Image 1 (spheres, rainbow, N blue to C red):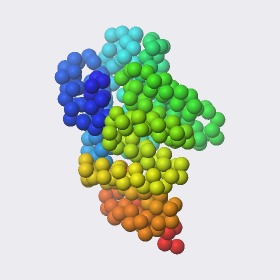
Image 2: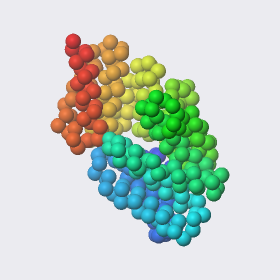
Image 3: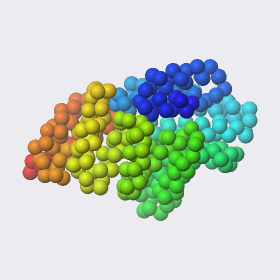
Image 4: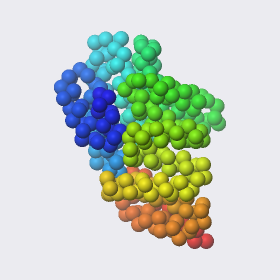
Length: 305
């Protein structure tokens, strides 16, 4: 499984799939099927398309069914509880990416219970902290609408849990490091976030998720030249790998356009905004493109006044 995970983060998805394929012959093990669903989820992002969505849900549902089958035979099956919670978390993440908020919340709510059960059975299972931390972070985001009372969890606790997994040696350690870098950037802990991203990039050169995370950190800390530099690197990377990915390219152009505006470079800003707006005919088929086009139009109006 770790070999497949490594290949996936190196964006060698075919290799990762081939490692997992023979492992799926064990009809009682949810891990390789869960891994295959994760590859398809990553490919949806890479392609900027929902085309593999049905296949993702099929495999994710299958992995969850394998967990339920094992739990029917033993209520002390730690890994069955762990993968059950992670399948639910991945389903919620996929719905969120599709901007299906209600479905995402519905999928997220029951995800923590099996993860807590797994941790109760095996306190050394650091991978469970990753899932619990991600769930708590997303719930804490929702808590903003409850006046920040901490009813749904706190980001500090969420980050502490993800950090435990990131510092561990479990299967989810690498995923936790990616998520920790993103969380630290969101919470303005920029030096540690950048350091972690750089360490991960040394191990996974050209990883587009990391480049996107670094670009956003630069923008948040008002380093707009660095934002543009990383944005150009990401653009070249995407064009070389998935040139039809309107989701990735439009999002990147929009962030770069905002950086140009901050640098008082309206002409460069408008070129990028017009490139996003030109893809308006695809806004129903490309995830998030409706939002990006609307944001591009709004930003363009502020420049043309």
